[in-house]
Image (cartoon, rainbow, N blue to C red; front, side, top):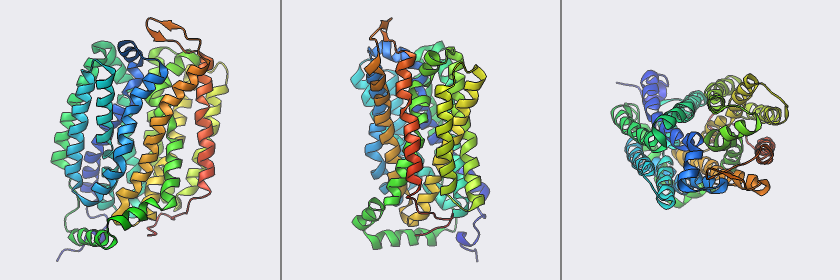
Length: 429
């Protein structure tokens, strides 16, 4: 007679990795959608006649759709087939991306971005839900780091490769190729992703029984009124701002104006931001699991991120190589944000994992929805109003004012860590 999966936490380890990484392909794909504006911002501003706040608002429609859908997505993922929801969401995202590629009005483009954002609400939550079923709690930080690494690979693709493709095919052609990639990912998810390991029926019934015993409103309240979920969301949102502000939209323009890099050098530096996260996410996961603590690495992540950002902003005449190193470090050090996901999974009942983490994700998307246009608004307050070839021009001083958003966010992240409850890498609920 076969033993239950919980008795053999590594029984499905290799197969589990295949399932989780296949599910993570959607997270990879969504990070391309989130970040490809960086390499085509000038073309978009020209074609749609946008200034910096308007471009930020267009990019922010992705976050608005994501924000509205995240909590419903968490509730659905806790109750329905994760595989089917992934397939549905990936299809919606692919169709939205294709629509954006062929939009000729701001209204249609913004609507397409909104739809893509709604589909994206399922990507990370689905990965965590699948991972929590295939791996034991003591491995979740490492697995979460691997999932985030997949997303950052998508962020890398959205930088130099997408910028090169845009130069070759124009932004519409590049986004059409991006939509075609979505079709391939739909096929791979359909082939490889499974909701649960074999022989886990007892766990399925236990989760269903717990949800039924709680009832919808009690389950909602258990997640919504847990302050740890909101604190985790705030920490992650603040630490993630470099991805949204530099990686997704303003990083290349900032490096051209402030550090006088070329477009190719700026694109490579932005790619290194994501490389830093690729290395930092599993590194923080391993360190946290090794120490048996979640919060201590998060404290050091906030402190070191603050110092590194000030060095980037205020060291005069830095070389191109130094900029590359600093962008890598910003990505690496801010990766401490990945520890909020296993922390919240450990501080909430297993049957409510996706709902709890959806609070975290809602806060992240809210920071993108607000942060991107706010960055542009801050720049516009001191801008000269100069326009060249239909594109507004912003000075180094304009960028420097807006860059202060990130050091302030890191200070707030550090303050938040004092209110966390340590889980010691074990389930507490």
